[in-house]
Amino acid sequence: MTILHKIISTGSGINRCYRIANADGKSWLLPAKNMRVALNLYQPSGRNGKLLKALFPRLHRLPFVRKAIKAETIYCTLQQELKELLQRIFNCGNLEFAIFEGTPCVHQKITIQLSNGSNILGYCKASDNKDILQLFEKEAATLTLLAKNGVTNIPRALHCGTLSNGVHIFVQSTAKTTKSQVVHTWGPLQEQFLTTLHEKTRLALPFEESDYYRSITALQEHIDWLPATTDKEVVTTAIAMVMAENCGKMVEFSACHADFTPWNMFVERSELFVFDFEYAALTYPPGIDRCHFELQTAIFEKRLSREEILEYINGCDVAHRQLLRLYLLDVISRFTIRERGNARGDIARSLDTWCYLLKNIKYQ
Image 1 (cartoon, helix red, strand yellow):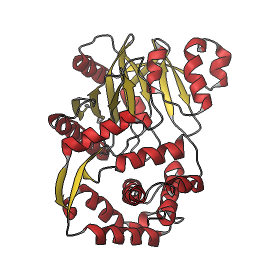
Image 2 (spheres, one colour):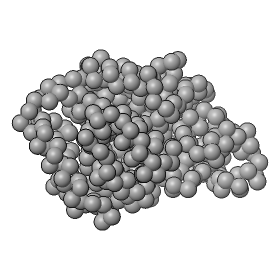
Image 3 (tube, helix red, strand yellow):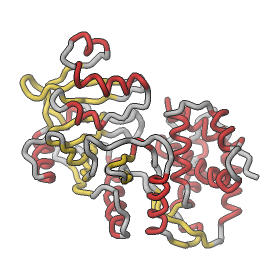
Image 4 (cartoon, helix red, strand yellow):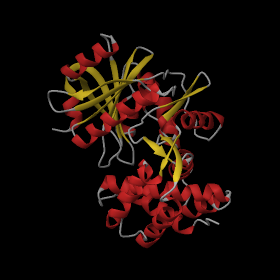
């Protein structure tokens, strides 16, 4: 039984939904009722995806439209135990839902958007993988700690636990509405959020006691997990240089979101709200989140070649290029360790790009 069929029950005469997929192997389950609200879960970057988001709510009743986009009709509802739990959490007996089945990878998980009419109430992430349960627990603890430190415009952790059928869930609040906007370019709102995050969580400690140190030493220990196409010597040399520059020193760190991208944030009433803190860490070099935003949008939204990205980076100031070295080692580490030597598809291509940049950036 797939994880999807552990969280939904299917049958005629329940809720009519459409299952759509894209070329990257990602799938969404969207209700026919209030579909425009449900599509807030769908954040396409390509032209075809944007057209689908704009037009499908009006045209989904037409059989030839559904056939053209290969939309599968499914009648389903949330599994009873999950539905009752979510109804209690959100104090709502008439929950509506949309489902993103997750990005294909080792840590693939389902995201459920919960709504009532035009009101988006919150999100529930679900998986039957015990490793992902640990991520859920870590995210819940991180959000609670950040809130205690005065960080605002982030979700509240509402529930973290396991259903009787073995499905692990993490439920969080949201301030998102149907008027929320996704901003795809860097600007003052992103800058201010990261500045506040740094100020609220800054901490000086020995380099060897930081989360960042643990990240790059893990990469050092598992260097053979890198794809065969990458230059492992370049990675090993870069780690040695960072160690030589920082070991034995007191260094200022702060919290890092670690997946700071347009698809993990939105603007509501001129304020930036950020979510999906599952990879967040508390002691990282400030500025790494901006590097992630720049490179992820360059790769996945602007569709730049690695040569074009390198040209842009080498036009930045020296301090930013040196910060990018720290970032590249961390992001290479995160995905190498996560995939355990089995990187495929977009992840393998990204690792190849990151290693190419690490080798060719002019650090002086």
